[in-house]
Image (spheres, rainbow, N blue to C red):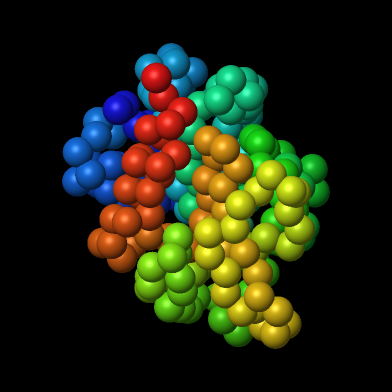
Amino acid sequence: MKIGVLALQGDFREHIQAVKISGHAGLTVRRPEELAEIDALILPGGESTTIALLAQTFNLLKPIRERIAAGMPVYGSCAGMILLADRILDGAQDQATFGGIDMTVRRNAFGRQVDSFESDLTFDGAPLRAVFIRAPWVEQLGKDVQVLAEVQGSDGARHPVAVRQSALFATSFHPELTGDLRVHRYFFDQVCAGAIK
Ligand code: GLN
């Protein structure tokens, strides 16, 4: 498969690395012509406000929304999760998203004291060590959204940190930073395999 990684800002190089180690072609995407080449897209971690503004500047906002509507598989990690949310809380004024997942995501949800932390969680039924960096959580979700992992927030409640809605998949955490490729493989084998003919 040809997997594109949106390369406007953030840790796209680590995702390209994970794509290649998993045996797929990894292509950086900065232009609509490059988007047209790929089978599936990864939205990296970084700063969702900056990525959204750059996507507008690089004429990618509308084409990515159109590909999402047409069923292209997309995986968003951290800022990428925010970019896949239909609704965001604590966003910048007029912050745009690509949208597609029927969920409300809260930016920087875990609070200032715990800007970054690691947590052992269960992802798709197996234990996984996850790295969170100024991460969002899912605050509300629609009935078609499946929860694949949760962690306890500073408010004491458990919040979804990995979700899927058909061909769209998002995690609050950064699997590209741990060298454990199971989350990327889940995207390639479970999400893309069914969606790409
Ligand atoms: N807090 C960032 C944002 O709002 C996301 C952080 C990350 O991607 N590590 O976009």
